Image 1: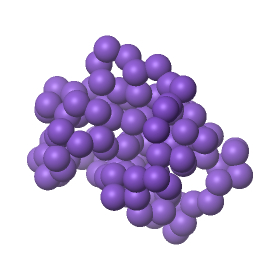
Image 2 (image 1 turned 60 degrees about the vertical axis):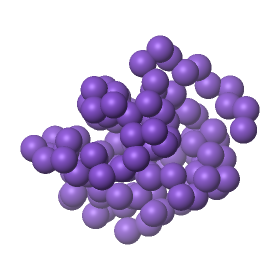
Image 3 (image 1 turned 180 degrees about the vertical axis):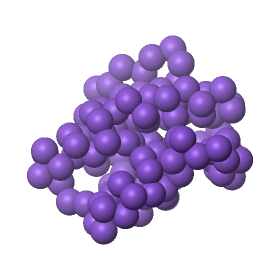
Image 4 (image 1 turned 135 degrees about the vertical axis):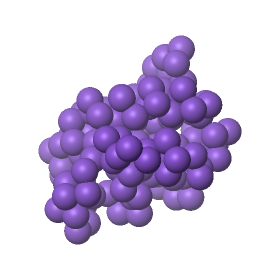
Length: 116
């Protein structure tokens, strides 16, 4: 798939809502990680997302169960925590991280569905 996104030198690629949705649709087995708090996740989240809060003291341990050589997708509320999570993932050896630009807020604004 040809993404019109800039992959920066760190291995994180920031995707628009359309790009994020297109990749998820074509690659449904890709881990989708919501790095918000459990309370935020319970309120609503993207379908098939796994909640691992970036502020969880066990974040590194929990995230390490995923294959570091495969793409993982991350999002938060507005895009800040997912960038922090991406940095942590890169430090742990992950090589391909797709980040939802402006988080779930942009997803909702675009009229996309969330689940509870």
